[in-house]
Amino acid sequence: MYTFSNRLKIGSFILMVVGALGIGIGFFTAPGTVAEAKAMVAGHGDGHGESHAEEEYKENENAAVGMGAEIEHGNATEVQNGEHDASHDEHLLHQLQNKPWAALYVAALFFFLIALGVLAFYAINRAAQAGWTPLLFRVMEGITAYLVPGGIIVFVILLLSVLHMNHLFVWMDADVVAEDHILQNKSGYLNPTFFLIRAAFFLGGWIAYREYSRKLSLQQDESDDNSNFKLNFRISAGFLVFYLISESIMSWDWIMSVDPHWFSTLFGWYVFASMIVSGITVIAMVSIYLKSRGYLPDVNDSHIHDLAKYMFGFSIFWTYLWFSQFMLIWYANIPEEVTYYVARIADYNLPFFGMVAMNFLFPVLLLMNSDYKRINWFVILTGIVILAGHYMDFFNMIMPATVGDQWFIGIPEIGAILFFAGFFIFWVFRALTSAPLQPKRNPFIEESRHFHY
Image 1 (cartoon, rainbow, N blue to C red):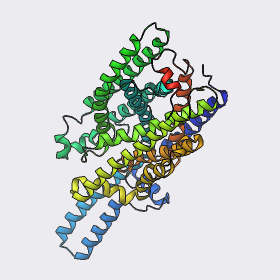
Image 2: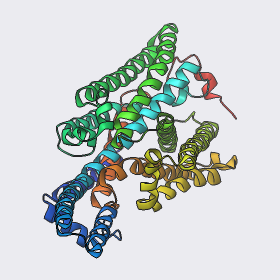
Image 3: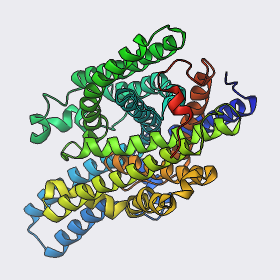
Image 4: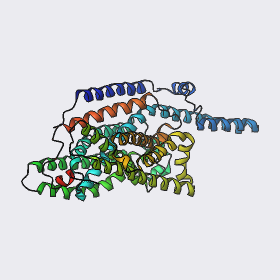
């Protein structure tokens, strides 16, 4: 039975406390008025300067002055520019107010989707009756335990968005929808009530499968036959159908709808690739840690090697989907599609292309050699790069639509990462203490114990 060490427990609490302070500072320093927002933009010195919208407005204003228009036209222009200025100021205020919320949402979503990616990998191996993974099932079950608290946190953030505590989802603003024909046409789907119903239904389905499959897994250890194992196989196969549908819709709702005018038919698969490679990476890292502490004696280098192969393979898969989505949209150059990438390349150049290097070049170069996949510290090093890269992936998905060009990696972003990292570690390792780490009566346990590549 695994024992949660005091050192790890204290470390996770320290991360949570420091992270909570960072999140609190982010909310405390967020502007409450337009004047405070302007002062923050003028003084935060992050290298971005004025927003592109403000620069464009000043250029238009100067052009109008230089033209020497008629007085009546000038008066009308002043009114129009005044309205535009007020609208821009309000938009800027919303962006800066969104910063702590967006930082919190990205981190909460990232760690929740790690657990959801592990759940997919767990169900796939159950349905495939894979012979090499039974020794890792309890590790996966421990990680997926985070689905309950992580899902509740994400749902609360979504609920607070519906209650207009933030402006993460612009389509939730009735005034914006009233002037936007595209959002009006999507209102049958993008409406707050239906949005929350879908979220609750998906969370309930994912958690219900995890809890029932875990129950069957534990009952199999005390059973005289394989009935629990067979039932687990059947429900896992059925769950994968639900999972593939619900995961795609979740990605549209929780991520893609922050840019409600934009859409991609590849987006569901793209998000799936990001979260499953992150999930497998965490399985490998937790397994290596437990093995180093003497709790997984039968897990050998071949198990770690296969997990590293999946890290390598799904990194290639993610890159294929990223390039397919980017190349087709960029080459077609359809305005309502390409604007998604124009904003990210113009204002997020470093994190946008940096995460491609972290998610593709580093895993390929570091894990290409088969021997390196068996070196534990090397897999850990690669895993850290992969997780950082995929956090930046979700950062690039959410931030441009919510904070615009007013982004930077500051106290709220770092605080949110530390808090959820500490909470994730605490909850996962606490869950690992609730049952023996090695199944007893899985029909493939001997095959897994003697697995060799």
